[in-house]
Image 1 (cartoon, protein in one colour):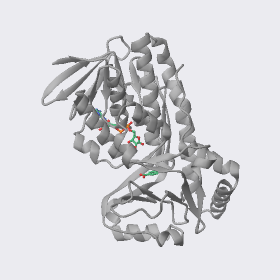
Image 2 (cartoon, rainbow, N blue to C red):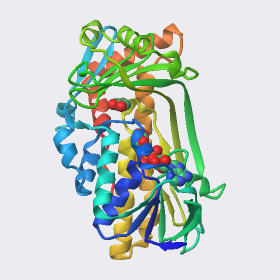
Image 3 (cartoon, helix red, strand yellow):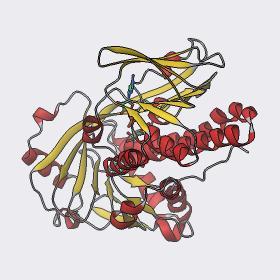
Length: 395
Ligand code: APR
Ligand code: PHB
């Protein structure tokens, strides 16, 4: 069987779904091809802190109603070390910017519902998705669905298929350079139906390792502790998790912790990764397909949104004004913001995690924390990055 569309989107994560919805609203036909089932995609528990740029893009896509009702607007964030808590007043330090706490799972849900309501085409459980002829004016995808091989012809392909996707691997060898840093630890995350420990997020540096207190709502909490890369969830009973978390928090915060059974528990490795360039011929990468950040700065999902914003701007310029010349600006425009977020995520990871037993390194880390949480310049630097660097336009 053969199908035809304007934009073939690989992957129904937040990048692919958001791009698809934005394009659909402007009459640019697209088909999303996803390897997994919708239930599987929705089962992944991921990030939850949205920059204002992403919030605005969700509004533009027409999928912001539930986020506006249920999302929690945070005007500050806390750093904890040396048994003390320091608040970073994001709003005051940035001249009015805030972040919104609203889970990626909920965004994915809202985008899937909007796509179904719009009657736009999504093909789930597609195997062996493969881009072809990306160097020509007539690229196409092939994939297997229910035992049949389908050919999807298109004008352009959007590779929104995450870090393990097929898109990046379809670039010719030698056409791309990869930059990577793997950290020797991971984050053990627990989701629980318990009220959050505090009104705002707490990022804690402790000699036993990093801990993060986050939330999804007033009744659902998300907590993390740094663990060695080789550890497995089976080694972590709920009791062991809660008692480790308490040890890493200042006493006055720990006193407010309400524990309960975990409803999800998983370990995520930490990695920094960038591929350059993000476009070859008629194949464009967006989101985790092109870059990974360690979660310490809450930038992964937000970077996916800024890539999508640029790709959407590009496709509008092409279809509404014939501006194919802007194709060559896509990658460099995205990468400037990506490297900014890579730097901040790397910095936050170094500031807050336990890297070694070296006593000198530990004192330097504490001096860094002291500086960044007391100097106005230090506080401003963290705040402006945390709320998100500005989006750059292609023209
Ligand atoms: N064929 C089709 N679909 C694929 C393939 C493939 N070969 N490989 C992966 N996919 C699908 C995955 O199943 C997944 O649903 O692509 C989707 C990619 O989604 P994400 O990994 O969520 O990536 P993205 O949409 O870019 O979202 C941004 O950044 O930091 C993170 O938490 C953040 O997950 C979020 C991501
Ligand atoms: C989360 O709530 O899952 C979360 C919040 C902040 C981060 C990372 C993850 O930096």
